[in-house]
Image (cartoon, rainbow, N blue to C red; front, side):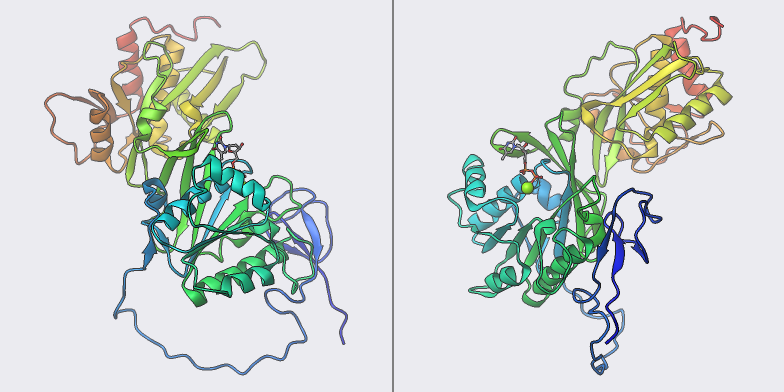
Length: 467
Ligand code: TYD
Ligand code: MG
């Protein structure tokens, strides 16, 4: 028999290498390559007799379809992120940093579901039964009928799940602790994680139970991250947040049964996660409207408008190379806005440090925030506060033009709802709602915006003066 060949697999991105190396070519991470045995697990490996194939009936795209049957948790922020509840027979991956609150969220969801009469099985591979019980008591979930097991072996878990009535929802916390007898690698490696997840998905598809898999995002590469199984599951949600802040966002990045880029917003309290149905109020909570360098961005998260404050600080530098520090926004996009300000508006920031922060530890991914960021920067440089009842949105192109963004009406509606009477937005925006009380300021390009701020400040100092 041929000598079984081992493979070297990057635990971060799953790239297969023929020999060990310190650095993975696939993702550039160091010390992430681990030797694994490809025999067993997914793919089977050499030596197995292939079974003769069976022809399946081909069909057409049109035909009867039915709405995917779902289990609703009743936690509306969670249902929103999953697209209306967990789909029966599907597998959902919930990823996130350790300690962010994944187990807390799922324990609350499990309790809510079991109170609605569903059969829920919670398999904890990380915590002992006593620890899970303690958490359940804190969350007020201890009186629910959630069935609990502390187990990590895939075969044992499957045998447990197969016993008794079919569960409606199974929670596996976490995939990194799963290990199967059929795969030879150590627990936590790509092969083990994939084998375990594959087995769980198969169980979900066969029985129609909804499967929720928890995966830790890992920094060090010795444990496979949730990335390596993203392609196998039906939906991928990431639970995000900043340790220094209380709020958490459940973000959909893949969903075969619903929209992506939806978010659910929660706040971590001492009795677990609380739903935040109006996130704008959370991100605008501690606003100081009088300070320069702050602009409110009217953003969208999926179908939902979110207003957040953008804060900029521009200060003369004492270093040879000025600092650019960004939290919650793409730093290369900041560099682009600075370049456009310099090239087209004569706003020179080469001798200034620039600090940019998105309030509340929130992370903006939309280019529509360009205008808000440019306004905050100019406001800070000019030392003058922007109107406190005004929101900003619009994308800036390299030519300095301001491009319209989608969902203008929703953004303006949310702003009006929260008492913002003004908005600065791209000139060619369509679907502008008629309003007698609000002022919309339509701007053509970035120089237009800068000169408006400069005029309202009237004492915008020329940053060139001091060189
Ligand atoms: P946990 O759900 O265990 O995180 P994960 O499963 O993602 O690793 O949450 C752990 C953190 O949440 C921990 O630091 C304590 C905090 N927490 C609260 O603040 N309030 C609570 O009611 C609970 C249960 C946890
Ligand atoms: Mg946990």
